[in-house]
Length: 317
Image (cartoon, rainbow, N blue to C red; front, side, top):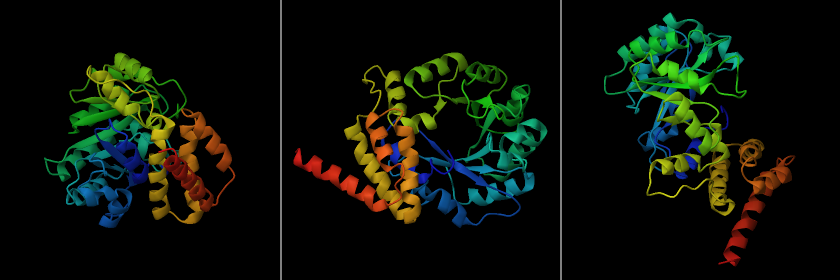
């Protein structure tokens, strides 16, 4: 989701409701202590008390493999009082893995333990340290060992994406293996991977034993997914499987306004098309709009489309 699910889409999706917490896209740590402006750029929610405009807390995520450098950066980040610091042991991108980061670390549980322990020591006790991992790199034979390394080194919470790096994002997700991980650790485990529908969420909970879920592409495709899952847990609420297209349009309009402020003209339509590409799996109307703009790179055409929708809405009042 790197490049699409940034702070702009976080802002929009959390407005749809049902999200308890967000984790930022990863912030790469190499051989230096990052200046504050890096965190301010990636997680501008820092200026709103580390919360989205709808009040959802955002936890910054660090990615790297240098123990001392990660600890130094975590200590520096802690000065800004984030609601927690997350560590990435799950990124499957080859360009990241070639440099020993992300899921590549799952072949070295001893190094994983050193990183978590060093970050935990560097961060004040009131700031939680959490982690996200996959089931492994090439296979899942060390999943439990890696989870234990994370839990025993001081992490307060663990998200497990139910695939290995080798699986990439190909279905299925092996939710039952998360249950195996849960059985060996004494910290909360959150299930992640291939949760596209409410039915997926229920099945994931059943097989993994996890109550808490992390959503990614499923919520980009269906912005109502989180609140619908929450509604199922509340007998007094009536689940809403999806927002109707008319209710989604104001969010698309707000998304476009935010994108237009942050990106140059050449990049704006591409970002909108990325989201429409996901939305069209849920909304036939989004398929139509996506096809209309598929070869368009002129943001004024998007402006005209949105103005037309607003005028039509005003006429129908």
